[in-house]
Image (cartoon, rainbow, N blue to C red; front, side):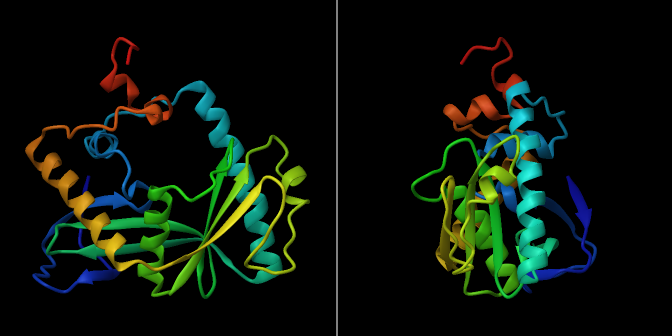
Length: 223
């Protein structure tokens, strides 16, 4: 998908041309499977597995409930839209920050909580840090539940933004310039594949079960 250059923050001022068409990536795609990004850019329809749809709905509910607390109790702005662009690289990165004040917070609902943040979640938050020009931000992992308040009511906010609770983990994350450059290289490699019309190699791992484009990689349903 391409779009004309419009207002937003630039990653670089080199080679800026208002007539350029830029490929649009999403911050949530940072360091994710390049083949999945390629299929999205090519406009293939998403076909989410039914069990993933359930988790997505639970995740939306969790975001809404926790986001409302961050907004009303701590004065955060929710779902803040952001754009970073580079005419020189030929693409821009779009995103919606879950919650932001003087630093961003990214909320991740999971069926099980990781001991450490996933690399692609760190990369996504890092894009927000770059855009916000913030030194640090937070990743909040919360266990998915049909009734999010049963989890959120047990969270201790007394030392916010470092919050604790069962079925909840918070990580303070500093901005990482090296990680941001790695993210740009990742997107640029997908851009080259998109322009050539040749799908890049996919991850071919457990995450394929959750991918809306799995049917393209495994048309017979076999891995």
